[in-house]
Length: 137
Image (cartoon, rainbow, N blue to C red; front, side, top):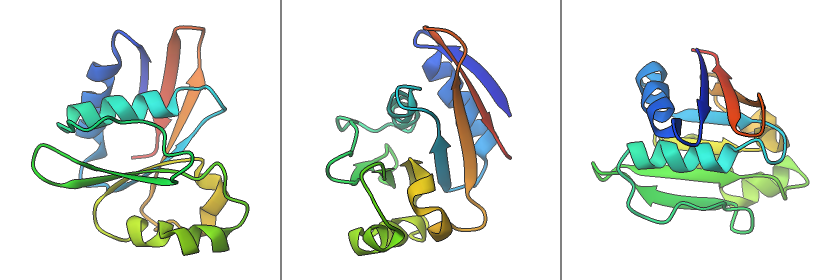
């Protein structure tokens, strides 16, 4: 699937994302610094009915939100990790194999820990206001 969106259309893109995602639970978000990974996570959470403040878990590594149906959504930011061992100690594997939705920024920091059915999402700049999202279905 491929989507192109702006800040004005990101919530519609998030709805299309969830429709295309089907029953997938783990999403590895790839993109350069400033590509909009956290902004996309915010929109994905809004569409799922999260009322909590959605922000980057850069320092905590893992944020946990509740969706409208009471489901858990994990938001992980692995940017600060040096090794996969650090990821294991931080509880990343527990989240990835919890059966709950996991939205993971900087997944390459712990690439060997992800389940085989992880959906890899690539976010690229088109221009200052537009992003392109591509993921394997």
